[in-house]
Amino acid sequence: MRVGRGPVPLAAPVRLDRPADPLVDLDQELLAAAERLARRATWLPDAPVVVPLRQLGVIALTGPPTRTRALARAVVCELAAFHAPDDLRLLAAFPAAAGHAWRWMERLPHRPGAGPGGALVTVIDATGRPGVDASPGPDELLERTVAAGGTVIWLAEGVSGEPSELSVRIRLDDHRWATLQETTPGGRRVAGIRTDAADVALCEAVARHLGPRQLGRRATTPVPTVAVRLLDLLGGLDPRPGPVDPGGGTPIRSRLLEVPVGVTAGGDPLVLDLKEAAEGGIGPHGLVVGATGSGKSELLRTIVAGLAATHPVDQLALVLVDFKGGAAFADLAPLPQVAGLITNLQSDASMVDRAMAALQGELTRRQGLLRRNGNLPDLRAYAAKRALDPRLEPLPHLLIVVDEFGELLAARPGFLGLFAAIGRVGRSLGMHLLLASQRLDQGRLRGLDSHLRYRIGLRTFSAAESSAVLGVPDAYHLPPAPGTALLKVDATHRPGSPPPSSQPTWRPWSAA
Image (cartoon, rainbow, N blue to C red; front, side):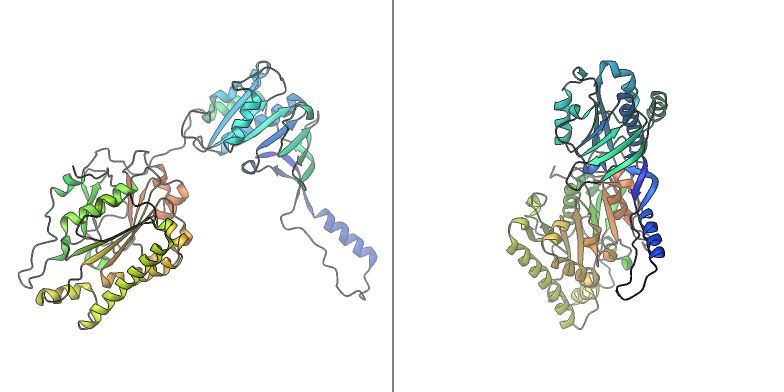
């Protein structure tokens, strides 16, 4: 927050570079002038003086009530104008005699209880103690605000009326001049501040202007309202991957690795095609990001169960990895397509190493199998050869689903190299990655990001996370109910694959 204008130290201070050689004969008059110039350039006059609220618990504005209230009102107007109601809550407690100075805040949309809320700033006008109109009292309200991680702006007439613990004191005089003093050892001191001030009429105008306004929280495309069940979506699909090509006796691959996950905004079924782009799919690798309660686990179960219901074991295998307890995949373990279920890695470091070794071993095994059977270029060629010679070992597509991959990479950074290797050669080996996480740390995707061709963003914790996943902040504005998401496919998507921005909706899958 800005409290006024005054002298502020330069971010890059000017320093007089004096010669290191003591034998150099300096002109003392010119040297003194240079030193004066350096001292003057150390401070920038009449610059905004700001206070970082997030780093402070209690700020005292001490001085004449008319001056402290005018400064506090200016601060509140500034905070309200530059912060959305969902990001900030403003609360005021004041004596009855000062009601005219603060009643205007009731019109602000940042009042407590008006929405999900974010940071909390409480203004406590204690210049009229005792008798502050607040329940709880000002001291208890201060304790509660600080305990909740908020900031208190405390107004007092003198030092004796300040709270016992302060982060910053701003002492005002009768002429709107002030001195700022941080109370921590070595804290900064800024004198000669011309404080900001806002009268009640200006605050009323600001509050009336902001009152009816709300920050839009809707995605740019309509959100589907129909609820869907996986079994209803599967009901219209042939459970086989495709009819047999009479010329070659091999299954037609058009429906291979297709799985329904929901409906679009128009009510049409949305089917994910996890094949590579050369075969008209959106794969082979993808990313799912969704905050707690967004439906991420249900989506992963939907994909796994839908693929298992439509693909036999000789065409699809699944490896399910959950860094945490494994509840997301526990009910799917009995499926015959599940070749491995790796859970609870956070409590057993040896399991992490074994999981990495197993996946690395499978990658090597598949490379060797293609090499031994005629240096075949990819799994598609191997499937055609096996159709002519059923004695060949089955080599199904392998989908590796990793939930909370961000925490897995934090625990074992070496997994990034393995995932990047699968990203590079997975297309030819029939190995597909589906990485999921509650949060996205873009730095952890280094070397892997270019291989993630499709991205699904359920509701995210922040607009920045949505932008990192989808390139737009829309996933942050999705409805709070679980099961709504945005799908993005890279710009090279082919006809027949979902469009770059579809909006499927899911609901939890169950055997019913």
